[in-house]
Amino acid sequence: MARQRASLKRLSMGYVYLSRRATFESTPNPIALALERLQKRGIKPLDLTQSNPTLAGFRYRDDAIRAAVSAPDVMIYRPSPEGAWQARQAIAEYYRERGCPVEPEAVLLVSGTSEGYAYLFKLLGDPGDVVLVPKPSYPLLEYLATLESLELRRYELVFCDRWQIDFDSLEYAIDDRTRAIVIINPNNPTGSYLKRVELVSLLELARARHLVLVVDEVFSDFPLELPPDAVTSVAGLDAGPIIVLSGLSKVAGLPQMKASWLVVGGPNDFRREITGRLAFIADTYLTVGTPVQAGLPVLLELRREFQAQARERLRHNLERLRALAATKSACRLLPVEGGWYAVLQLPPGIDEESWVLALLEEEHVLVHPGYFYDFAGAACIIVSLLCEPAEFEAGLERLGRHLPA
Ligand SMILES: Cc1ncc(COP(=O)(O)O)c(C=O)c1O
Image 1: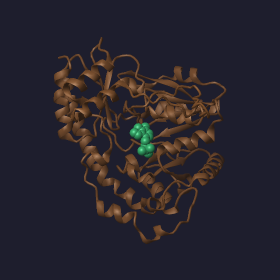
Image 2: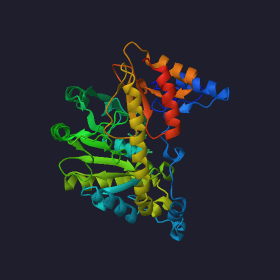
Image 3: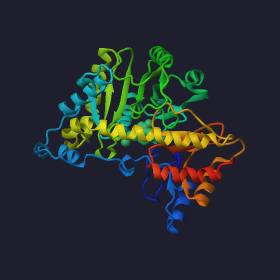
Image 4: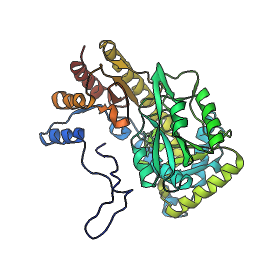
C-alpha cells in the first residue's frame, strides 16, 4: 500500500531510459511514513488491515501440506503449459461441487491471480487498449494494466442500500478500444456480489460491444450476508465470453503456494481459441512450480478446514464491528455480503486521511482509508475481518474511543 500511481513520464538515468509503463513513483504515502516512524520508536500498532491468512492465527494441517508438496515425483520436470492434469481435474471438481459445470480442459494454472490478469491483458488488448474496472475496488489492478501498456478506465459501483453496478457509467466508459470488463465477485473491499439482473445486462453488453468479462472470484467462497439474488460464481457459464480467476491464496488460505487458475467459459469456439492462446502465453513463462502442481489436489481438499475457520472468524469479527457501529450513530457500517473486508462510513466533514493518521499516531491502530480503494463521496475506513479476534477486539476498542459518539 506504499505504492503510488504510475507517473507516466519516462525516467532517464542519465545514460539509459526506462519504459514508461514500469516507471512508478516510489515515495511512500503518509500512512506508510507514519508506520515507519512508529516502528522506529519500537511501537507495533494493532493492525486491523491484516489479511494474510498465514499470519492470522489459523490452524493449518502442516504435515499434510508439507507431504502434499513433497511427493517423490516432484523431482521430475515435465512441464505442461496449462498445468498438471490432476491439478486441473481437482479444480474442475471443486467447481462442480459448487454447482458450476467446469471441465478440466477449461482450467489453466498460473502462479497468482496477478499473473492471471497479466496473461489476460496480454491476450485481450494491444498497447493503448482499454480495460474497465470497478470503482471502488482492488488497487493493484491499475499497476497490472499499466504494466501491460493498457489503459485502465473505471466504472462506478454505487451504494444505495446495497452496492450495485452503475450501468450508465459502465456504458459511458466503453469505446472502440475497450476490450474487457473486470468484475470482482464479491468485490474487494465493498464485499458486494454480482446480482442476477446485473449478470444478464453484462452478458448483453459483452455481446453487443464484443467485450470479454473477466471475473475475479477469489473471495466467492466467503459469503456473509448473502442476498438471494447474488451470483456466487460464473465459472463454466456458456452464455457469453467469461473468464474466471481464483486461486489457493484465498480459497485455501495458502498465498505462499503461488497457485491460482483461470477458468475459460463461453461458447465452445471461444473456449477453444482462448485456452489455446493462453496456453501459448503460459508456455512462454512456465511459472507454476512442480511441487505445488503435484500437491494441488490435496491442498484444495484442505480448503474445507481453512474455510470453516475463516467463515467463523469473519462472522464473529463482523458481529463485533456491528456492535461497535451500533453505539456510534454518526457512523455507518455498510452491509457485508461477503469477502474479508468491511467498510465503515465516517461522520460527514471528516478528512479521511488525517483521521486515519491520527488513529495510527494517537491510538496505534492501523486501518485503511477509503481512498486507497478509490472510494468517492463519504469518508470511510476499511478493516479486515480476517484479523485474529483478540487483536481485532483490542483495535475496535481503541477505534471506538477515536470515533465521535
Ligand atoms: C480482488 C483480489 N484479487 C486477487 C488478489 C490476489 O490474489 P493472489 O494472491 O492470487 O495474487 C487479491 C488480493 O487481495 C484481491 O483482493
